[in-house]
Image (cartoon, rainbow, N blue to C red; front, side, top):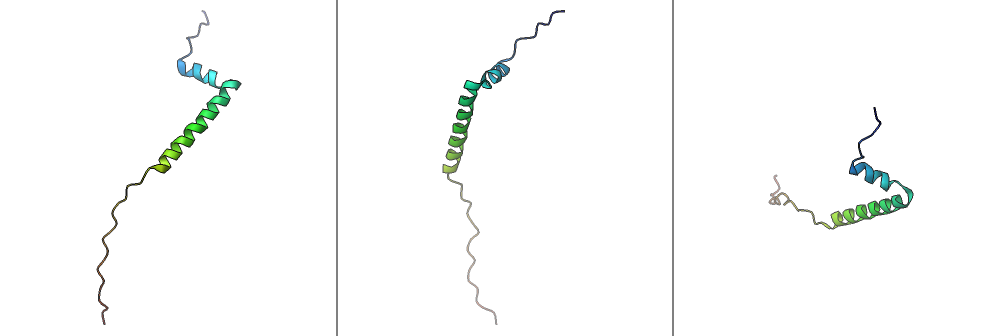
Length: 63
């Protein structure tokens, strides 16, 4: 029996590449920039305003 393992899939190869020190700094920085831009974009979106209940008519005081 040979111990020939199947070639690693592309995701595993990318993760092994991304955790080595020079690349990990870039991946971390890219993640921070991505999170910042997405949160900035989400903050600039205008919320949909749901119309509130209609104002109630003033009522006469009951005596």
